[in-house]
Length: 253
Length: 133
Image (cartoon, each protein chain N blue to C red):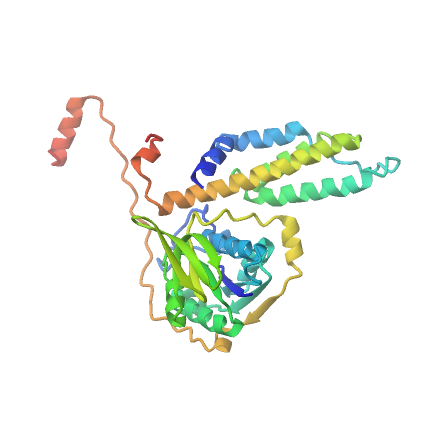
């Protein structure tokens, strides 16, 4: 029986109104409510479900970042993961951290922990990269089942139903493999207070990227962050003639 | 997923946000008075249950759309409204109703998040938006 690594990312809560910093270097994160990425919640739920069906033995929740990410790992533990791994990244390294560094970390961890499955969310709601799963699979030379809306383990193979533009695609890939969770994969359970209390007994291991032999140097530099252009207010007209006149003045007709 | 989403939507739509809390206060979850020593043996395990229920609801209320303060105010008054209930059967019924509200809140939170994600990441066909076809 096998071990599953689940990646969880601490992001700004989906319901928060995002504000851009005055210097346009990024978004305001200080004092803003953070929570687990919704797609990561779905990934955790799938891993825990597989464990409850006794198809896998252990679920390990992994997150990279400063000390605050341990809250996110605790939520994953409260949802049913067995233990957590906190890869400590802070300061400039954390700001520059992207899918490439994360996938290198996951590749190293997968080998170290002898995982047979890595389940990630399909993308994070803050950067919307949709790259980490694919890069991790490439680095490990493992097959990938991305945008999974249904996962079935069948011996040493995994049947994945993927959500693609044309509809649904069913593929069969062999383990070990990387899966990324799409919205309709499952309904994540809520991490209730009693579960969070019970999860306090579970262990979270601490390590640095250097321990895994990963260099955190970024090849990407953020030049500027801007808000999307504000929608112009609409104009109300009284009669059809007014409408025609306005359209003519606008050059539309 | 689609059918159950529709079901959930009909059961817990946005206008239920207020109704949920009205329901909670109307159901009057009891608070067993600390002074009740002469009460039956039943009161003691129920007291810890009621306290745990209150804590769980308070924890859940942090994410309430109208604000955590709004929620905790109404939660407290709902509990205080029936602090004098002593019949264990009554208390049990009301605690069960509290558990029901917990489930409703979890479903509400999930549905909000699901619909927000769906709106942001998936193109909605006009027919679906207009609820036709």
